Image 1 (cartoon, helix red, strand yellow):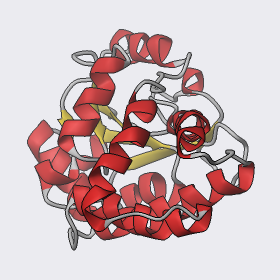
Image 2 (cartoon, one colour):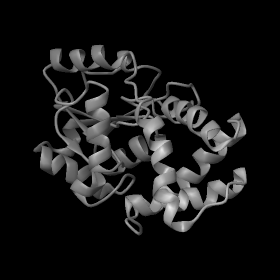
Image 3 (cartoon, one colour):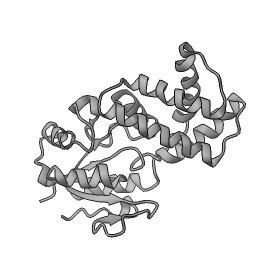
Image 4 (cartoon, helix red, strand yellow):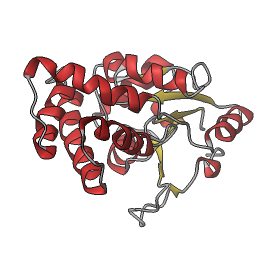
Amino acid sequence: MLRGVLLDLDNTLVDQETATAEALRRWLPSLGVTCTPSLITRWDEIQERHMVAWRERTVTFREQRRRRLRDFLPTIRIAYAEEALDEIFDGYLAAYESSWRAFPDVDDALAAIAAAGLEVAVLTNGSTEQQHSKLARTGLAGRVGPVFTVEDVGAAKPDAAAFLGACERWGLPPVSVLSVGDRHDLDVLAARAAGLQAVHLDRRDEGPHDEPHRIRSLADLPLNA
């Protein structure tokens, strides 16, 4: 019997993709660079590569930011001093934080979860400080139950220990928990491997289309499992 819904945060509750693009469109001109779709794609690729190192706990959160700039700034022909990297990133960060928005379907989904008598929590691969700030800025703080991060559980998705650690701290058996997220590899396949139920939130209809438990909106959450 389903007892709890374990939600991803980025691109599930908060529109991370749009926030990143908006931030780049505001930040890059301050460096004298025109933002283009190819630069947004390049930033996303670099970010994901270095976030893997963060998830594996081989670098600090601040260091992965510095590494992203070391890869990206040469792309846009911006010279930099090593000691200036944190200040440069702060310019992007200010634009990024002001662009955080919750998806329009989140409020109704949280209400539906509560109406179904289910508990709710968040499991995110982000840092504790940033993710709590994200929830606060988007009006979701205190409304999504406990928030479990890499730093809390000592592991990151897709490691089964991330899901099992969250369930243990939450006090719910994995089989009674539904994992919901936008990443099929991290939020769905990995959750099932850890013994949870799982649904793929595929907002952009990108697939995989053979996934039997795929929804396009949080309004379609299956809460009667």
